[in-house]
Image (cartoon, rainbow, N blue to C red; front, side, top):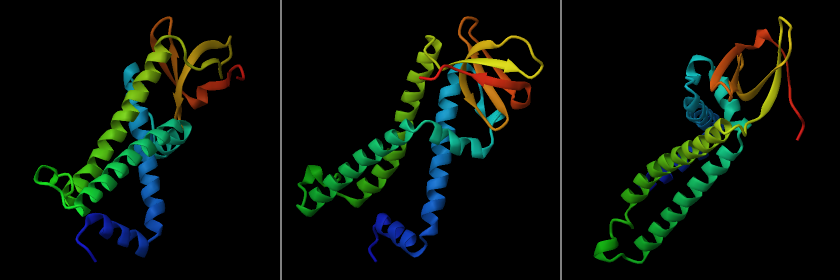
Length: 188
């Protein structure tokens, strides 16, 4: 076996294929956790106070565009790594030797993580800006104790809480699920 870290990782996954499912679960949770944190922080909400780990897994599935961003970033890094291997095979000139080295490709894998997190953060900030400009998902919330429905913008939900935003008052309300009778909205 070669000393290349990627080949060692491939060998581990080939010998223990169940680790792939676990790795995808962890990746989905991390993506959902980072997206939820990045989006809700623009409204002053610390999502970690209201969510469980299963909520983060669902967060990445509720926003499938985050997966498109992950695929884009990983594709860019894989393309760069392939180019690096090609430079290594051609016998790089002195000034390109660093680009064709296995160490460059190893460090480049960490760059993929940085790129993914940057893309998701930028996406979350654009979404938060749109919500603050009153372009979010408008819902009418009826509470369990009765009364008229309250128009709000739905920022998100967790297993125990509903997070609502009132754009006119620039106010965030977090309600326990038990206090909500219904949430209704216009079908698109």
